[in-house]
Amino acid sequence: MSQFPYQRVVVTGGAGFLGSYVIKRLRERGVEKIFIPRSHDYDLVKIDQVRRLYDETRPDLVIHMAAVVGGIGANRANPGRYFYDNLMMGVQLLDEAFRLGIPKFVGLGTICAYPKFTPVPFREEDLWNGYPEETNAPYGLAKKMMLVQSQAYRQQYGYNSIFLLPVNLYGPRDNFDLQSSHVIPALIRKCVEAIERKDDRIVCWGSGTVTREFLHAADCADGVLLASEHYNSSEPVNIGSGFEISIRELAEKIARLTGFTGDLVWDTSQPDGQPRRGLDVSRATREFGFRARIGFDEGLRETIDWYIANRESHLADLDSV
Image (spheres, helix red, strand yellow):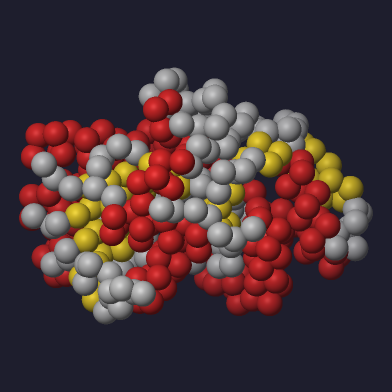
């Protein structure tokens, strides 16, 4: 494997879920100077903190993955915070990178930026053809402003920044806090705990009819590094697995893999979110050779096994935050 072309890399969000996989991949590629700004050291919503970060690290690549984010419930409870914090982080990190002449900036957006009723599979050309799903629109639009900024700065200044759109991620080390987790870790935890308590049912949000696409975080990290090395355009790029599954099918699959045999009860008073999600991933394959490698059942088993083996320490860490 060849050496990665950038040797001083700032990874915002590097201490998070996806970040742990990206850091591992960077180290495997021989990168020794990796800087992971922690929130208690750098408040990236504040411009002076962004400037201090760059002054202290002098990177030749910035991978911006940090986000204030959660599931449907968390998005519904924090629309103002999710809009402001994510907008200001992206705008300021990208602008200061340009002003300092940092050679490349990689911004990670979110699939929540797509319009609520985007035709499936989602094509990057459809990104502006409507308003996002309401519960996560503030978050999605704040992240999408990095795309506008990237294109504007490339047009006016020739600055090399790129914008990636990862689909819903999952895998070991995910967030299993039921107050802020996404659907896969939430369902895994509910099933495992129901088995322990000998419950005969678990409650799932929504109707179960909506669909989602999921990508293992290790695959996503591969996509981020491939794009960092080989992609130099401000046209957005989907990073996904190219398959779609209903939430009902997902819940049944997780119940089967965990061994939960009780009933799945659907609480239709809770929102479903976007009706369908499934990506056209041909641009990522064409532009920098990305394809997901980890099969969904294989990835789910790995995630379930990790949670069962590590949940006491993981949940203790959540309680201490």
